[in-house]
Length: 465
Image (cartoon, rainbow, N blue to C red; front, side):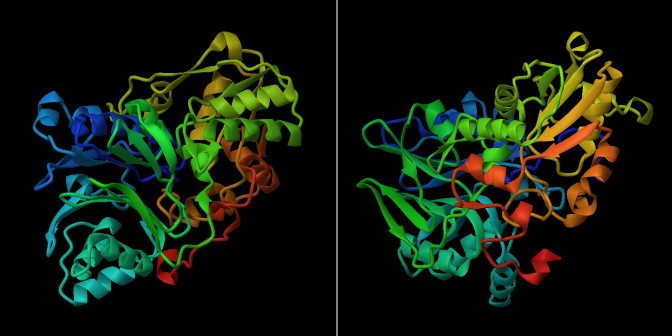
C-alpha cells in the first residue's frame, strides 16, 4: 500500500510536453503558459529549451511551473523556437533536476534537445547495447536512450535519424525534438500517448500533449499527430512522414478516464463528453437508491454529472477541495494522520449528515484514498456511502508511462469486490463494466491493458517482473 499521507490514489502520468516554432512571438512566455495548462500532467519539475536559430539554451528545475520560472528568467530566454516539459517522477525514479527535462546534448550535427511523455518498453535492452559500444548515460530517463540513438544515426538528417530511432524503439512516447533550426513532433507507432498540432499567427506552429494547451495560448487546433508519424516544422512550414511500422491505433484509455484535462479533445473525442457518458452508463448498469450523488473533486466531477443525469438522483457538492495546498506540507503526527486528508478535502456536513451518498470517482487503484474519504464522510454523519467507479477494475500494471507499477499494488488484482468493499468501508462498491467503457469511448481504438491485460506491444519478461 502507498504511504498513509499520500492522499491522491489516482494513477499518475509521467509528464506533459509542449513545443512552439514562431519567429514573431515570444516563444518562452508562450511555452510558460502552455506548460501551465499542462501542469496536471506533472508537478515535480519543469523546464524549457529555447533556440535562436544558432544556439539552444536550457533552463529547468524541480517544482511547479510558477515556481521554476519568473519574468527575469523568461526574458533571458529569447528565440524563435522552444520546447517545454512538466514531469511527474515515479517513486522508483525521482531523479530530481538531473532527470528533469528537456535534455540537451551536442552531437555530430550540432545541438539537440528533447522532451518526452511515455515509457520505452525496450529501453533497458538498448541502454545495455549502447553502453557496451561506448555510450555514456547521465540520467535514468528513457529519453536519453532516444538521444543516444540519434547520435548513432547522426550521419543522417535529423528527421531520418529520428525515424530510425522509432523503428528501433518500442513502447509509448510523444517526443518533441528540437535542433537549432527545426522542431519535430514524434508519436509512437500505436499512438498510446497523445500529441496534437496547432497553428499560431501567420507562421507559428505548436505541438502539445493536449488541446487545452493550444486553447490557453490562443492557437488554432490543426489535427492530432498520427501513430508512427513525425511532424517536421521549420521556416518552410510543416510536413509529415510516417514510419513503415506504424501499428493499430491504441490511445491510452486512462487519458479519457482521468489523466487529461476534461476540456481537451484527444484523437477527435471530447474528454468531457466521454467522462459524462461513463457516469451515465454506470448509472444505467447499476441502480442504487440514495439521497445525493457526490463527486470526488476534481477527478469525479464530470462523471458525477452524467451519473446524476442517468439516475435521476440530485447532484450535490459534498466535498470541498482546498486548492491552495501545495504538494508538500508539515506532516501530521500518527495520532493526527487524518489531517492529511482534511487539508485537501473537507465534507460539507449539512449535505452529508444523515444522508445516503453515492460517491463518484474515476478509478480505484490502491484503495488507500477511497478508504480515507469514506471514513471522512461517515465521521461527518453520512448514513451510507456507496462508491461508484467510472472505470473497470485495474487488474494489470501499466508499462507505458503511468505509475501503476506492479500487481502487488493493485487492490483489484488481489481481492474480489466484496473484499475491496470491506477494506475501504463502503456500503457498496460498483465499477463500470468493460462493455460500458467501450460504449463510452465509442470504438475499439484504445489501449485497455490495465483492465484486460492485452498490451498493444510486446512486454519483455524483465520489464514484467
